[in-house]
Image 1 (spheres, rainbow, N blue to C red):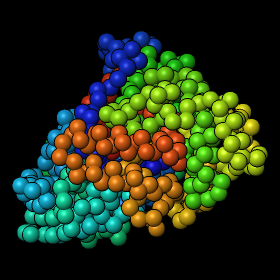
Image 2: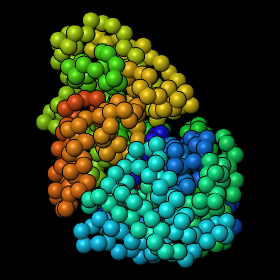
Image 3: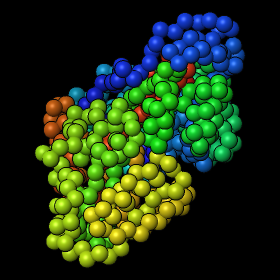
Image 4: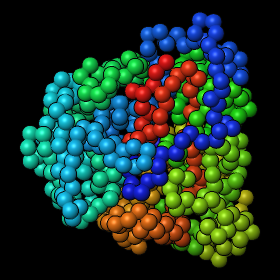
Length: 526
């Protein structure tokens, strides 16, 4: 759970919390001093309820607050929507709604967008100006995170055409542009305070980041200058607890109120210990992630398509679901797309160009020229959500006669060695993130990053999809792009995972994310 993206055209309406048999909304009756009677027993009232405070658990420490240059899940769960807001927002039907921009006009040829900026203030009291908006959009346009900059592909100019008016001109119609204006790609910040973004990001959101202590917590307080409805919860502590077992124990003990994003290594415990009998167990695709293997196609022997296909045949996807003991949390797939995308397909021999088959893998490895040489597998040592899949993948490779040298490294080193290096320095790795398939598009080979995938065929299909005039045309083209990715076997999808979390039953107002994976504080209330 490390990396993250911008919204796409034709996104399926935000799904309601799924799995009614597992999502407990048990009839709760209050008793005692504000406590709650649940199927799992009596749950005392939160010590923070009377003060309208809240404590949430974070599994990872972001290390930086610069959301322009970083897409760590540990960062983008908390800042977007709460501290910084985009120009627009999108409702459950995928329709654009006002946000920092209170209105907008689109030219008949869909190449000119004129945004009227709301007359509001940033949390530091400074007014939001058209210049701030231009600066913010240009900054995200230049972001090194390709999923943030991608919506600007067709953008020619971004100009202030009034004190509270910004005009954007495109070279062609672009569905990703307008949807990007409701996501990470359009987060608005004050130009004057931009130098402090890594330690003190400022925005127009309902909360202010009051304090961040690395390795300990983030404290958010209600923004007194917020332009919208004041939030019910006046203070939110996001407590950083890398030990998931300790976090679940703290939830049971009443020390924290919610654990909104629980990694797969703890799913089995949720099932065995029946946490859903006491807390609301939520599953939601919006904070779901794709689990996938990446081969470094810039290096031998991984640049051999026949070898990649043979290695892909060693991956037993069902074994992952069995290991997590949580069939409600993941679906096996050979394509890249969460199960709320129209082109999602469950794993089958028909949908997988390289389905799991140990016998076929052994034969195909030999045919591809594999002679027992040691292959390098880079894995994260301090992210349980990925170390467990690495364990299983290496066992599966070994089971087909593949020799593997494991390079277990920390997230900090992984980020430098793999995410940031060009060309990347690894052989095989496993990753989990919510970024869409568009992250693998690459028009310029020199920009090839750690995903090591620059397919002209796939990129062309994605460009055509972006310029599509209808939802059906878009989805058809994206399905074709996904088929190219599956065939090339550089990125080999394994699972489509749902977001999974636990909330106290007396904590109300939970809503699915709107800005990528944001955990929205403003709608929560006791």
